[in-house]
Image (cartoon, rainbow, N blue to C red; front, side, top):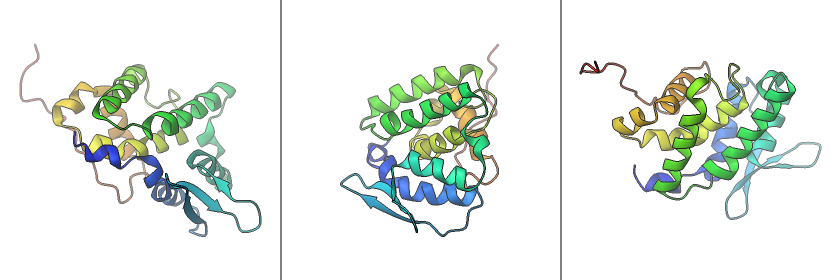
Length: 184
């Protein structure tokens, strides 16, 4: 993994991610974003109201604006799980600064995704979208062996990158599907 990946973390990419999210939700490009402070925390300049600050706050606002509340979870438990993973994205994924941090995050996510299709279990949500965007540059730097080591993350990531409208202009990450050797 290249050390450069650690420098390209979430907040710097937050503005681009919000534009990608806006497009994937089918919203018109009418929102104005800026970065606030040293870490360039995203700010949405609202036309006739207060500005909104923070990646997840703005993302939730966009989902509601698009009238796609199902992306926030359909049950009380699902909503809590979505919120939990949005918080994880901002507090863990966006703050990683070393290969060791990345390894720990991937190990934790791999274990969590062992028996799940999506982060809430069986429903595609905003948590999947924002974690996909936040992990894209990390997964892009993984070797084939590392992708195999984090098989559940790789499976989930590959599934999300093929979900209609999500990847957009981001590079497709290749995962080897055919083994050239017999494991028996």
